[in-house]
Image 1 (tube, rainbow, N blue to C red):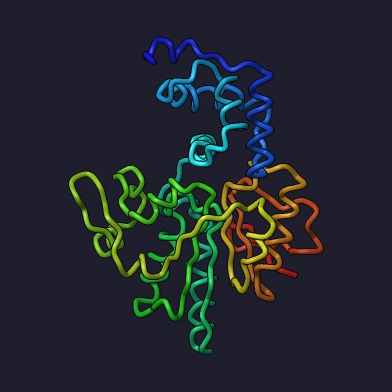
Image 2 (image 1 turned 135 degrees about the vertical axis):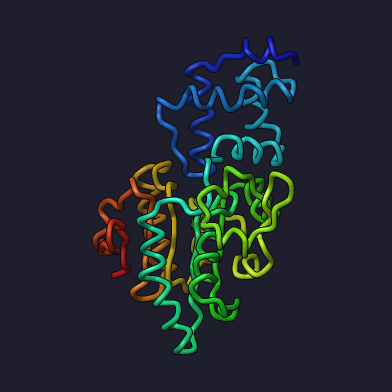
Length: 281
């Protein structure tokens, strides 16, 4: 299909609703009416590459063909979001000033500190936490600290496992950490083995209750810029899952513009500097 014919593809309101509902049922992610242009713009090139002549035809294929690989590609295209290293300074300060001393204290008592980065995309968040922990506690090893990064997207997880990032993605990394933990290859940067060893990556759909129920024994959960894509009902179920996943007194960190609604029986909001976090009740 030519570029010209790709441009001619238009997403009707009815098909947008069908595609949106399919995403909601399978992932728990809700796209409001204002996201129609986003869906159209993200999918139009993919449909053209695959030879589909309309969004309606593509929806019917996704719905009825049983092509799980194409369905996963569809979810990847629709849910992948931009991220980068050392994002959101107040939350980084929270981790450095409050969490790192907790890691050290737990290790002194012979206990491993476990962190879950939920919705980790291409890995920048869990690797950032690993870099900060290694910088503050140079001798920290996988027996003392475990960081698990999960995401719905197999494609994003593949990028995270490759550990190769663009100059744009690493632009906020402090120079000493960049020199120590990354190897430059032309215009890309490869993360070091000592950081990789602290991070385990796995696929997980937060709206899938059995998968959520398997996550247990964490001291800290980061789930940034993820809740905004879910309905209130799904958010509540995920919050309940996070509560069960955390150890007594464990902490949950959301994105700077996110907050927990009607969860007072699960978490108590607290503040460190400019960072709001939630402690398990």
